[in-house]
Length: 265
Image (cartoon, rainbow, N blue to C red):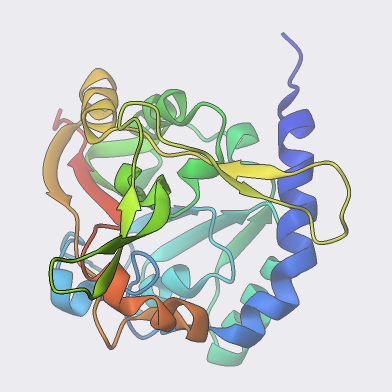
């Protein structure tokens, strides 16, 4: 069967290349901590990563500017980091070189990536799987790439967050902003228009928590942690726009984090 992943990934590549410079200018991601998503605490607080040792092999899927791989490489892990955007990878390579770190950065669609079975001790992905057409099929492939006892750490958009902001009036006459989710089992897609105005938008898709749980189980993984952390005032990952929405994001989960382990053999 022909590999047609490029047909689905080309709009993604164009979108992330187009916004890369602006994204870097307005977004602050602390590479001295492992991040899980906008407005969230990093791993210093959440403590979701497995024990890290020099020489462990790690793969980051959808690395963006590579901050999480920088964090892992500083701890002696042998890191491979994949992203679809050449522009974001250029920033990642420059930051790694400045830090004196050796990371195997690769450009390409997550759907097209392949690796031998049992290649990695740790596989991570932060807010990339929601842009993949078949995320649950990808979970099965990730499970095969893990070494026995290896760990998969995934953060993705929470289904509640893919609702619509609405303003509700309280009994005392004040108003409160919240999320309206018309159908939890079929959350709305978050459509991102191309900055150049061409007709090739991309979509961030959310899925019910149970769907993720079942996908991990179907892949033969043991789910160790499932977290829905609230937003915090001093996050590892932020921008002025995200911080402006802090009050609303403290009230609902924006990100779902799953930590799973491959079976020991």
